[in-house]
Image (tube, rainbow, N blue to C red):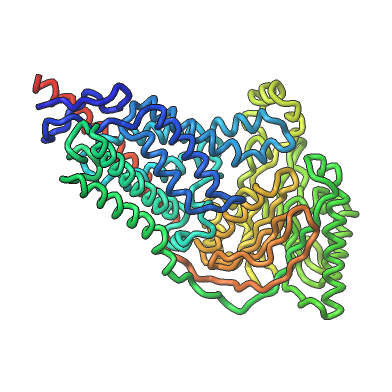
Length: 566
């Protein structure tokens, strides 16, 4: 038995490969090359997301990180993953520091990048499996990315799924797979494509080394993820891998999404705008409410004049009434005037006081003409550190020490306990409030409860247009995933209608008052993704864990064989 020799940085140094020919193993790429690839991976992933929308760069980003981490030591793989994560998340989440300073942004970026560090270490750890079974490398890459996103979307404090690979694919042919296996399947296929690219580039790098007379082994021997027996075959395999990777991304485009559901309903989305951007829009609560009332009254006038179709219902955004309309008669009266004028229900985004001192609720209220407030949905997933402070006695002193904005969060928003399916005229509308659209299970539960349409109420006044566009990409995925025509209603933009095929209609400009009116088709059909729920992600995450265990077994077996051989 011959021990495979590698560079000092490889994660498999001194580990023999059973039944392998007595040749040196392929070395990892030079450290500085790996470092550059990790940084380039983060940049490429960033460019795949809105507002850049270069979705085809997502597989490239995955490939670059896989190459950087292949055959590395765990600590080096973790370092490369961390670098990739920081380069990606720092600009992607830059909207979080728009009005609250850099400290929360830095902490959030650091936390998210830690998950990429774990991913980088995992990619390095499974190198022994990829080297032994050449077909497994692309699959392992896809599984590990899904596993990383599953953890990041659940921990800590309920997780933060922003930046999932699937959310970069709003304009990609792969989006249609959301109807089959949801966001996890979209992520897996994109990352599987990236794994194929990584294998192809690895094969090509071996071919180049041979061409320059610097090979340390026969061309792409049994230690390489893609084997070959001549200097021409690695080049051929690399080409085939690239073709397979591209085909994997483009092929889902032939799938046809379900057509429109039942008879159409006319919906109106009111984007009232705020007097000025920033956290102090809360101090302008009366003005924000009046903006939405005024826009609705103008809509009613247009309907009466016959220039606009009468909507079946109207949707206002989150925080359109930060004055509790159930307790403040003036606020309730203004909303009632708007509902009476337009003559149809209005879904009002409101902040409700209590119960108890220091508590509030983020809610959607169905406001009916003539009768007033009706069904109410309370946001079930308040955002930690934005809508409430977890472990307040411990966290609050620390928060005050690192940012002068910590005092703004004096009220904890309490979570709701019931689903957001509300009767709006002829349709059953699933209310999703702001960041809730990022959570698979919450949206699925809303559809399971009978939602025929999805309405995402959001307030982007404290962020920027990039955040709004990133959120709209999530709405697009949910529309396809559950075959539900959807809408996004924002205080300042972007507001839009999205049909069940993921196509955006009548998107508004940012920081601009607007009213959009269009037809959506309620549906009761259940896609395969709706029926399967979390099962695809659970299976893939379990397989990722099994791959890590298998890599440990291979490493232990190799060490034992080496000891016996000595």
